[in-house]
Image (cartoon, rainbow, N blue to C red; front, side, top):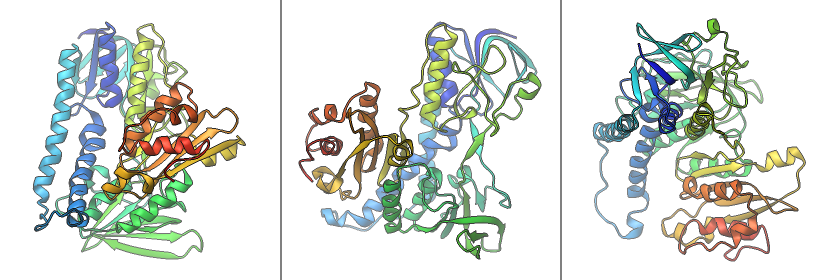
Amino acid sequence: MADFDVIVIGGGPGGYVCAIRCAQLGLKTACVEGRETLGGTCLNVGCIPSKALLNATHHLHEVHENFEKMGLMGAAPKVDWARMQAYKADVVNGNTKGIEFLFKKNKVTWLKGWGSIPAAGQVKVGDEVHNAKAIVIATGSEPASLPGVTVDEEVVVTSTGALALGKIPKSMVVIGAGVIGLEMGSVYARLGAEVTVVEYLDAITPGIDGEVAKSFQKLLAKQGLKFVLGAAVQGSERTKKGAKVAYKLRKDDSAHEIEADVVLLATGRRPYTAGLGLEALGVAMEPRGQVQIDGHFQTSVKGVYAIGDAVVGPMLAHKAEDEGMAVAEVIAGKHGHVNYDVIPGVIYTTPEVASVGKTEEQLKAEGRAYKVGKFPFMGNARAKAIFQADGFVKLLADKETDRILGCHIIGPGAGDLIHEVCVAMEFGASAQDLALTCHAHPTYSEAVREAALACGDGAIHA
C-alpha cells in the first residue's frame, strides 16, 4: 500500500492530463487505469483511430475525385484493409506509448487495474488499498444503448466495433446523425459502402448552427450518404446477410425496414461510473447518471472530485483536459477555472465543421440583438486551389458592442481555423479586432477575417 496526495481514476484525456498537472504542481500522484494502454477511449478506440481512418480514406477520395484534375495520372490504388488497420494501430500505439513516457517523465505512478472507492480517502485497485488526500473520478463514458438494438460488435456495432470491422461492408446503416455516426459513415462511404443514416430528429448534428447543418447534409449527400430523418428506430435483428433495422417515421407513424451488412449504433454516449462504489460512498448523482459536482469539481463527498464525461457538459476530450488541469490547480490550492462559453466543437469529415460560442438559434431564443458576418470559401483562393470551395465562415457579434459571440465554420481546416476565434473570445475581442488583424495570403484563415469584415462595412472578396 502506498500513500499519495492525489489518485486519479481513469487514464483518458481528462485523467492523464490531470495526473500530469498534479505532478507538475508538486503533488505525489497516481493514476488508475485497467486497460493495457493509457489514453482511455479517445486514444484507443475513439478520437485518434477514427482520425487515422478519416485521413486514409480522405486521400483515397482525393485520388479518385481530384488527382486527374491536377494532372496526376495513373492507376488508382487498391485498398488493403489489413494494412489500413495496421496503420491505424501504429498511430494509436505511438500516442498511447507517448502518454506512458510522460507519466515516467513526470513521476506519475500508474496503478494498473480497475479502481473503486471503498471510503473517502481510499482507492482500491485489485487487492490493494491506497490512501489519498484527494481522489479524482475521470472514468469517461461508454456508448449509449437503444431499446431493441442488441450490440454484438460484429454486425451490430458501436464506434468501437466500427473501427475494426473484419472487412469493408458493402452497405451500412448508421443509427444517429451526430458526430460519431457521420465521421464513421463518411469513412465507409469513401471505402465504397452504401451508407444510410437514420436520425430521430428532423436535422443532422443536433445542437449546431441550423444553417451549417443544412449545408453539411447537402455536402455529405453529394458524397453518397443517404439520410432518413424524423425516424424513430424500433429495433434491429440479425439476418443471414447482416442485420435489418425497423423504424417509424414520426410524421405519419408509418413503419419501414432497411437491411445492411453492418449496423452502427451511434446514438451518443453515457457516463461510465460502474464499479466505483459511488452509491455506497454517498456521492450525489445527476438525474441522467453524471456525478454531481460543485463549482470546484468536488462531489458531495469531501476530497472526492470528478471531471470529464463523468460530469455534466459536452463529452469532448478537450473539455475533459481543461477540467483535468483546473481540478489539479484546485487541489494544489491554486485557482482552477474552465470557461465553458469558449469550448470549440469539431466534426472531422471533409469538409470539416467547427463551432464555438452561441448559435443564431440560441441568440434568437435569448432575445439578444446580434449581427452576422458571413463569407463563402468560394471567395478564398487557397480553398479553390484544393477543390474545397464549398462552405463558409459565419461570425456572430453583439449588435451594439461588436463583441464576438460565436463562430461557425464549414470548410477546409475548420477545426484549426476556429481557434483564432476562441482566443479572440477569451480576450473579449470585437469582430473589428479580428477584421483589423493582418492574415497571411493565401490561407484559409483569410475567410475568418473576411467574415469579421462582413460584420462591419463588408467583406472585400465577396
